[in-house]
Figure 1 (cartoon, helix red, strand yellow):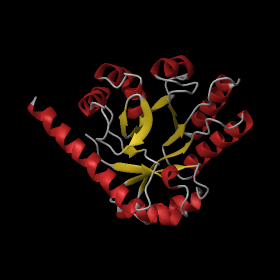
Figure 2 (cartoon, one colour):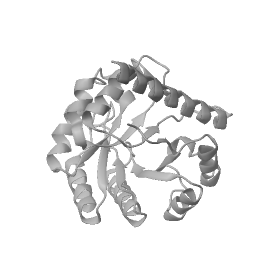
Figure 3 (cartoon, rainbow, N blue to C red):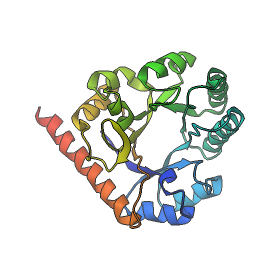
Figure 4 (cartoon, rainbow, N blue to C red):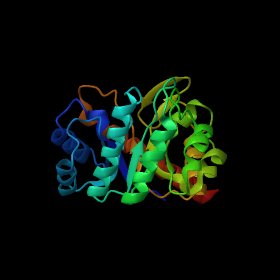
Length: 251
C-alpha cells in the first residue's frame, strides 16, 4: 500500500544540506522532499541526495508570508527545478489571507506545470487562503484535472476533516502526502502517533483514494539530538503503517 517513508529538508534548514541529507539517510528514510526553505536547495544537491540512495518525492515551496512577487518567482523556481531534475511533483503553498492575486498566481503556476510536465500539489493549511478541502476545491480543483493536493494529515485533523469520507473524496487528486502527529486544537507538528489523530481513518481514506505514494514526515521543532529524533519518527510511522495494514486485512 505505501512503499516509502520520507522527510522534508525544511525541518533541517538550520544545518548544511549535506549534513541534513546524511542524517535523513542514517535515520532510515527512503525519500526526501527538497524544500526551497532550505538555503542549500539546488539541482546539484538533488543529485547528491540521489547518490546517497534517496528517492526525491518532490520539490516544494510554501512562503505563506512572502510578498506576491517572491511567491511567484519561488513557485516557478520549484517547478523548474522539479522539471530539470525529473522529479514528478512540485508542492506549493498559499499565502495568509489579506493579500490579492492568489488566483492569478495559481493559474500561472499551473500553466507552467502543464508545459513542463510537472504535477502541482497545493497544500491546504489552516490560516492560509487554502484553509482546507473546501478552499482547495474552490481555488485549485477548478484549474483542471492536472491540479492536485499535497494532503497534510495533521492539518485536516485540526479541522475535523481527517475522515475516510473526506480523504477518499479527493481520489486521484492526492499527488503528495505530509504526515505528523497532531493534538487538537494546537497546531504543532509531533512525531507520528503522538496527539489524538485517528490513523485508521487516514489509512482507510488513502486506500479508498488509491494513494500509493510516499508518506513524508513533516516535523521541524527538533531537539539537539536531532538524528535520534528523526530515527524515532521514522520507526513510529513504520509501526503505524504495519499495525493498520494488518488491522485492515483482518477486518
